[in-house]
Length: 210
Image (cartoon, rainbow, N blue to C red; front, side, top):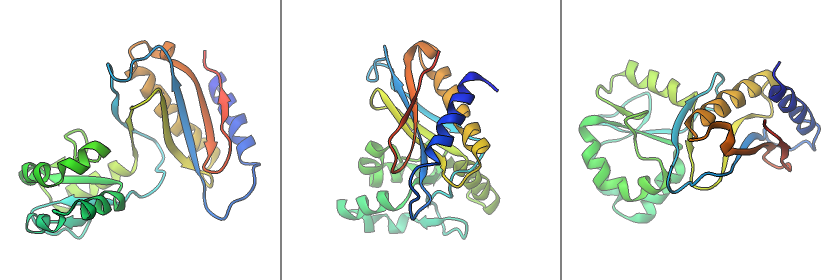
């Protein structure tokens, strides 16, 4: 077991001793950065984790209705011309996918709200050519095991697991995400000041990295 994993395990054990809550708290990972200009080198990553954290609420902009995902077809786009309705839609779903053929219309109708929130369907994970059941199901499974990292400030905060998950699974997820973030940073570990883990309602526990 690596030194980092040992420290994470100890911190996780400590967190799980905290006061019981009436809901399954999230386990959050916070990566604090240093010597890094967020504006000059923005990070926008999709990182696959070995263990699913939760089923994400996914909406599809598709040419026709799908039984696999909540769907908005082009003839319904005009229903969302009001900004309030658009905002409600963005808050309701974690992730949006789109059929390539309708993507230009999606950009026009929804881009002004989806863009700033980072929820615009992406070629990396979210735009499909064929909206058949098999393709949509595979994409849903992939999305449910993917964490999106969008860095806007010198501290990255991500939900990495649930309190009810086995420790090993939480640790696997943390290590996967941490290693991918390091790879994407211009100066690797030098850009990391420290990391913290916490539960939704707990104080964070700080972990130094070498």
